[in-house]
Amino acid sequence: MDTNNNEKQLSMAERRKNGLLWVDTGENMNQQVFTRGLCQDFNQTRPTETEKKMEIWKQLFASCGENIWIEPPLTLAMGNTVTIGDGTYINSNLTLVDDYEIAIGKNVL
Image 1 (cartoon, rainbow, N blue to C red):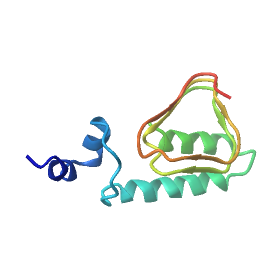
Image 2 (cartoon, rainbow, N blue to C red; image 1 turned 180 degrees about the vertical axis):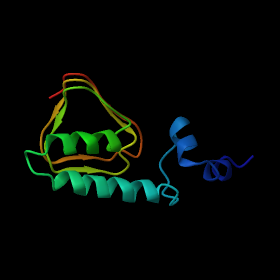
Image 3 (cartoon, rainbow, N blue to C red; image 1 turned 45 degrees about the vertical axis):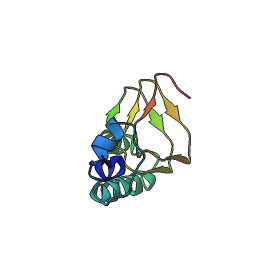
Image 4 (cartoon, rainbow, N blue to C red; image 1 turned 180 degrees about the horizontal axis):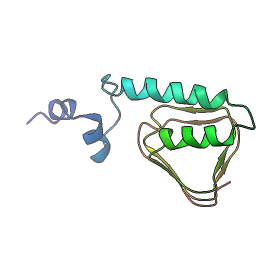
């Protein structure tokens, strides 16, 4: 049986689940475009637009804890593969290559 051929037929969700390497098949392009747009929206918020930032975070991440703070700019590939725990502070210029799951725990600085 040709394992490589079988691997090529898997969706990216199946590849992630099975611990296989990322292959850019284009299937996630819509998610990446959506995420880039949200990152751009977040990066252009004013310091006083706290509620707007929180709404963007809820759309960006798989889950987002309470009492978090993220300083812009932020760059993500997928967004929906990232979880952030309660009480976390993320300083400026964070770039995540989040083709696979990234978990940021509670009270992380």
